[in-house]
Length: 96
Image (cartoon, rainbow, N blue to C red; front, top):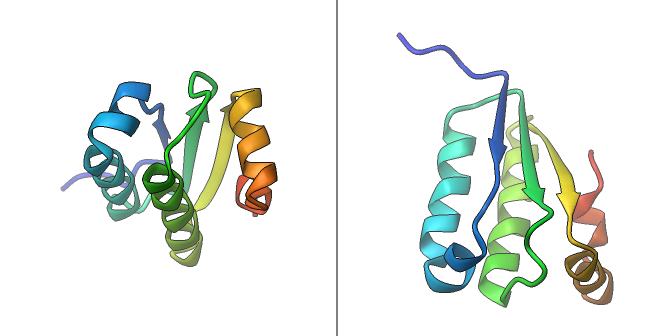
């Protein structure tokens, strides 16, 4: 019997986000399926994301929170933060 983890940390790789976004989405889905209390995502080394990766991240944050999982962005690259502000998506970066 496996224990439910208290916290799962995700640090995506820039090349995965652009070359294999399916792997990124799978990583996010697997984190939700493990039903931790908290998921922490580090985007400090990610200066840009394509639209598919951004939509996967927003989908993930909505679904994880609907499952009662606390989500936090531990670090975000300033350029990526600007992108989220321009797209009016900054609300998804704030802890709920």
